[in-house]
Amino acid sequence: MKLRYYVIFRLLLAIPTLFILLTSVFGIMHILPGDPIVIMYGDQYPTAYVDEIRGKLGLDRPVWEQYLDFLKDLSRFNLGISMIYKVPVIRKVQDVFPTTLEVALGGLSLAVIMGVPIGVISALKRDSFFDHATRLLTLYLHSNPGFWLALLFQLVLGLWLGLVPISGRSPPGFRLTEITGMYVLDSILTFNFKALGQSLSYLFLPCFVIGITSVPYLSRLTRAAMLNILGDDYITTARAKGLPSRVITYKHAFRNAMLPVITSVGGSFTGLLGGTVITERIFALPGLGSLLMEALTSRDFTMIQGVVTIYALIVVVMNTLLDIVYALADPRVKY
Amino acid sequence: MSGGSKSLFRSGINFLELFKAAPRSAQLMVIFGGILDLILVIFIIFGPNIVPYDPLAMDHETLLPPSKTNFMGTDNLGRDLFSRLVVASRYSLGISLIAVGVSLVIGLVLGSASGFFGGTLDRILMLFMDALYIFPSFIYVLIMVVVLGPGLWQTALAISIGRIPYNFRLIRSLTISVKERGFIEAERVIGADNWHIIRHHIAPYYISILFVTISLGMARGTLAIAGLGFLGLGVPPPTPEWGTDLASGRAFLLSGRWWLVVFPGLFVLIAMLGFNLLSEGLDTVMNPTVRRLK
Image (cartoon, rainbow over all chains, first blue to last red):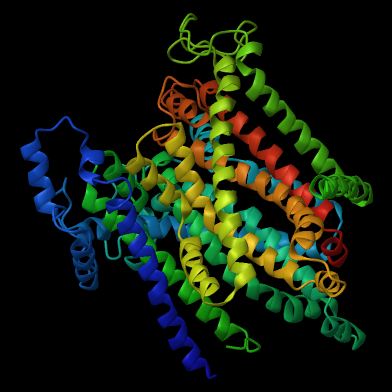
């Protein structure tokens, strides 16, 4: 099969995945234990008021009709009107999305920058002191609850040492022309270097915490992939030919070892997205996670459904893209 | 006739042999992880009996720093933090244990059916589980907790559902790999029936891997519960729970009351270390072939 067909096939395959996720979102919200309105609002409201809300949301109609409407609205990118804010859910999502994206990308890059070299070095110097030390360290980091680590960093780096700001996105009096909503990108685009420094200093803690919690996963995967490849016959051949070990390591082994790592970035991204709810609360960042928490506590039914739909979209798009990148990068992949 | 228990017993002997043959680092991991887990088990069983004070009684001065009498300090309501955190292991870990059990049973049924029968059933189940697998399970858990309402059982159910796709995939691939083993076929050739094969060959194999899975699941579950508690969606107060206590202590971080944040997190860390060390050590001990390849 040609690559082009594989890409089309992979894109088509994303449709049932997305469909299943959206259906389960709908299912949890509508079917589980009966009436979402009673669960969300309790019984302290007058019946007339509850009935009014139910009518407004169309919850008095049969479930399958609501389900079709949900899908129909989605196909037009209509996520409904927030019950609390009275604005389209999609608008609120657009407002907060850049924050989440910026922190997630920052964290993911830090994780790759820290995790991949650790994995490569410990594979090359297998059973050395470095290998054992990093193994212990990653095991410790893997056991460390991310939110606790975040609080400790806030306490030590922010409060005691005063090195970095502990929460928020920008200092008071922050000036920046917004283009994308991602402060770092915007300040580079507008050559605003003061804002760049400020936004980077605010981004540091959340990105660092996210990065460091993803390091164990990435570094161990890299180590395993490298070890796997270093044992391959073609590496022995390269050695026998007398190639310098630097060339063997970086040109022959590292490139091939990176392939499984690319796919697994999708896995860390999923975990990272789940963590945004907690991270954004700790660092008072107005992102998707905060929006979801707010919607959950204020029982904003349409908003919850909308934000979760967005989460589903993100993971499906991310995973599809990574699979395609993998196929592009590895000529050996049989489609 | 006592084949079932005999094969279990046999896998126990195997474990000791495997343990002796395992590398030093894996042995140490199992031992340290085991000790940490043992301490937690003692906390769960004897928690209320061994703590110095009543975890709910507000009969101390509020916000006392760690001292000889309250060696992890007291919280904002004048309760002894150490007593609270020890008793909390019952709730934090108990919920996790229920969740692991439920998700394992469901994963076992669906995963082995999918792997054993294959075909259309397998394809449909895989499509569903793969879709759920890529979705951040914590978001699911969060929504489920809100929809189901607060409480021990609801939290456990929510967490177990978030865990099902992982267990499903594991059990499915395990079933397929066992099904295709040469020795299973050999057994069949010499006339062994399905039941004999399951009891003597598949069950011991499953059991060794289940221990690793349970330990890993406990770690994930503990983290999820602490996370929920931290967001204020966990076990409702005044019940002690690590995440909830950490969240309420967080309000006093700015005024320098570090112990209210450090100690609850330390308990989560100890639990996580225990489960992770044990699962990783066991994994190496139980898979000598994989180890040799590495």
